[in-house]
Image (cartoon, rainbow, N blue to C red; front, side, top):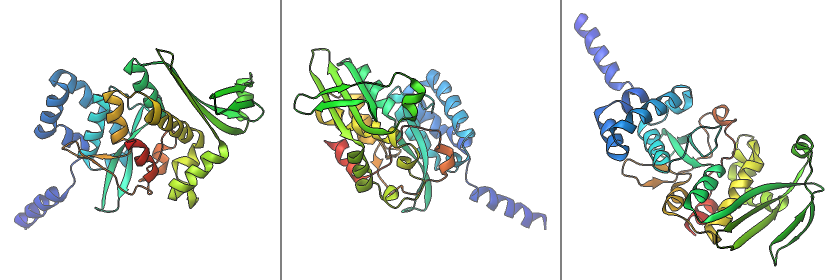
Length: 282
């Protein structure tokens, strides 16, 4: 009887999925971390990522290797995973192709700005929602915009958005700007987000349309006309991907969030789409 109980316990322990804290403290994980960022920084990194995962039940359910690989990419890019800073996120998704849960690396629009500034090429970079009554005119030929911004911050926040403006200026004086109407951005979301088109009520576009629009504008602007550092190219290439142990990036159908409530407060995240990948490769 005792033998059977012992055998059952061994089988249960073997089949039990290791926790992320157990995985990241394994010799294999520690070796990978130390090789990439060094032993001294590795202790800080491990403590930080374990703390972040421990407060997110949905992230705990993801394959540990996808969490670690995504976090190491963020560390290599010197970006913070803090939702308050909005530079990058590890977002839980269902990988229906393999029947598992994974952590997807998603670059926030503030991460785009951080990497652009850090490159040293940009004197100015900005993205802004234009509210009803503010736009006087936009000249697409000369890329000049004339607006009368609402001074009251609360009033401006509550006003309806009618368009989006993004611009950058290099240190040498070269300047580029684009403006999209709200209708154009809406068409973009409908064309390239199947979840938003189906009005599931759980897509990032529906939760924070302006945040998604900011990222779209910056990606359009920087990937087509901007100078991109090595870090910027790396971030854009691997944005919205599942990072493997070998550093390769896999893109999967991620219409199904593991738990929407875990990322409601994580603003400025774009969801995966074919168009996004096309822009990333331009």
